[in-house]
Image (tube, rainbow, N blue to C red; front, side, top):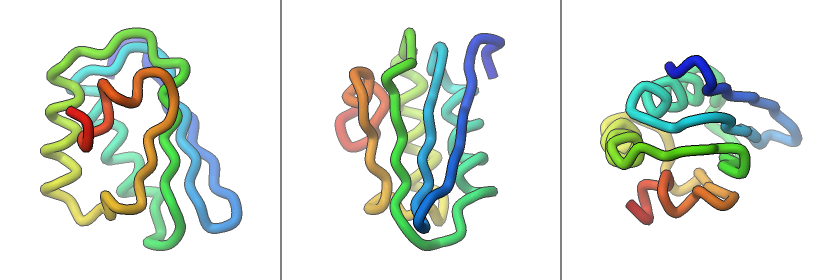
Length: 93
C-alpha cells in the first residue's frame, strides 16, 4: 500500500461505508478487497467513496475488477461514489 493511501471504514444500519484517500494503484486495490473481505458480514450495501482519491493508476482499477470477480464479495452490493469512481469502479473500467 502506498504511504499516502488510507482506508476509513464504518458500519451503520447493516451497511458498510468506506472512504478512500490518497493514490489508488494495484497494491491499494488488493488492500481494499482484503479489508472488505475481512469486515463484510454478508448483509447490507458497501458504499465506497472516492472523493479523496488523488491519483488513479489504470492498473489499480483493472486489478480491482479481477480481485472482485475472483472473490466471493457481492459486486451487486457495491456502490462507488465520488469524482474518481469512473476510474476505479470495475463496472466502468
